[in-house]
Each structure stands twice: as structure tokens, then as C-alpha cells.
Image (cartoon, rainbow, N blue to C red; front, side, top):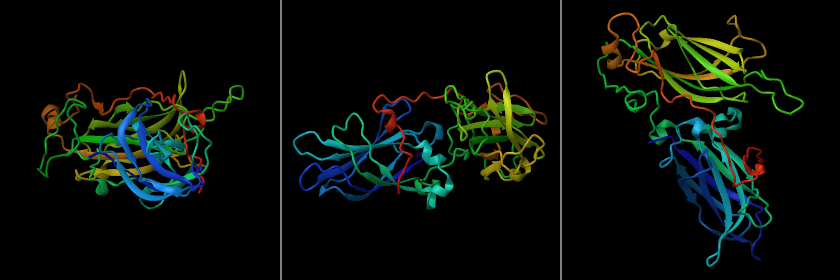
Length: 363
């Protein structure tokens, strides 16, 4: 089972009045992918008759049919409120669009218990809305925890479908004395990074950065893709390194990508001995970036979220031999589990620009 999104459609207020006694209101929930294609995830509330202030308080769960495990491939949620008509076409009286990536990037102080976003969203007009629009809709949104949804972390190698991602099948190992030999690292995301590209006053662009992360383990380097024009990139990329020595370190470097060079943004180091002799431990934490000398700064350079697990992989043991580091079956010292890829081009021909994101929320 993948990651599950729980949506509670609570109520709406001050909707457009279609009939003399109000409207017969229901909300329809749909999702479109990064290419603006409809997904097979959808839901619909019951009809509340004769009101412009409907109360639904209905819960829905999504993620059974569409994969929501990758933060950088989350769909856009689109909720339309309709006036129900039994014999003619339903009338759209407002819409909200919300990119789910913003839910995982939301500041912690803006979320409630369990990472729940509890907000009122202003209804807007799109091409399907033929009349004037008024009112707002109250939603509660959150991703269920692994325990609630039954979803296992990607770092849990007993459930992760590793074969086909990088050509290696991991066998289940129960021997407790087998030495750890494969380190899994996921560079999840960063926040509060520094502005490296000054604003261009001629074009109005800039005031941001193009961050990329480089990971170095036991002398071997790998890097994420570049995320353009953001101070809060979401990479969510996983790598595996063949490493045996608990005295080794994981060095993470964040840089701003320029056309001909890269500029330093911050770095930090993680000691591998924190994971030694514990193949079941999944390490997930935020790390503050430090300057070139390894010192923290008063103003702060931002933070990076890293997930790691150090496991025993029998395939690595069979191909690496004793001592030294040899190439694994993919022909390289590390493997990016999902690949880098380019930046996703998100288009939405169905909406005007004003309807693309609903993050300006009123309580």
C-alpha cells in the first residue's frame, strides 16, 4: 500500500444562491497529475439541499489507485462545488486547486496534530464556472502515518521492490552477525536555504537559488538533480553505497547551480557509527547546514532532511569479497534508485493563472 491522503470536507459558507431557498450543494474531489491528466482517484460528498452554508463533515482517503509516495510527483487536488440538478447538468459554483507538494512543504507551525492542515480555502472561478463565485470551503488534509496506512518506508528493504530499480534482488537475511555492507540514503528535501541568485530588476525574476545536493561516502560521490528557483527544494532521491567501515562519514554538500559554476550554500557530516550493528534502524532527521569551515552561523544557512539505513545485502557480500570496495552489479559504486531526470513541466490549460494554486488561505 502506498502513502494515503486523508481529506475531510467539513463545510462551506456563503455560496452562490441558485434557487430561492439556497442551493443543493455537493463537492467533487478529483486529482490531476503533473501533466494535467486526470487520475483515477476521486470522491464526492452527499447533496445538502436548500442551503448556501452546507455542512458535510465527510472523510475520504486517496492513494490506493494513484501512487502518492514520491513528494516530487504528487498530483494536484481539484475540488469543485456544484449545485445539483436531477434533470439537467449540475452547475459549478466554485473551485479550488491545491498542489499536494505544498502540504509536505508546509511549515510545521502551520500544521496541527499529525501534520494536518486545517484551513478555509476561497472558492474561485474557472472555465466550468458559468456564474459569479462567492464563498469558501473548509478542508482538513493530512498524509496518514505509516502505522495508520500500513505503508512501509522505502528504507525498509524487506518490503521495498529493489529488483527492477537497479537490477539487484535483496534476499531476506536473518543472521544477526552479518556485517552491514550497503548504505541507503534518501535526500528528502531542504528548507530555509539562502538566496544565491539576486533579483533581476529588469525582468523581475530572481531572488532565489537552484540547489543541488552532493553526497560523498567512503570517497564515492553522487548527486541529486538541480531544482530550479526555490529555497525549499524537494528531491526525494535515494542512493545506495557499498560501505563496510563504521568509521566512515556521510558528507552532504549543498550548492547553487550557475551556468558555468556552482556556489557553496552549506554542508554537514553524519557519522556512520550511529547506525552500526543496527540493521533495522531507519535514521530520519533534519540537519543544519554549516559554513565552509564546518561552523554554524548566527543567521543560519538552512536545513536538509536525510533518511538512511545501513543493511546487510548478500548480493554485495557475494560480489565484493573480503576487504576493499568493489563495483556492484550495476557497474558503479552507487545507484540512484529513482534516477535524476529533468525538471517537470507543469501545465494547466484548464485553469487561469489565478486558479493554479490555492495557498493564500483565510481562516
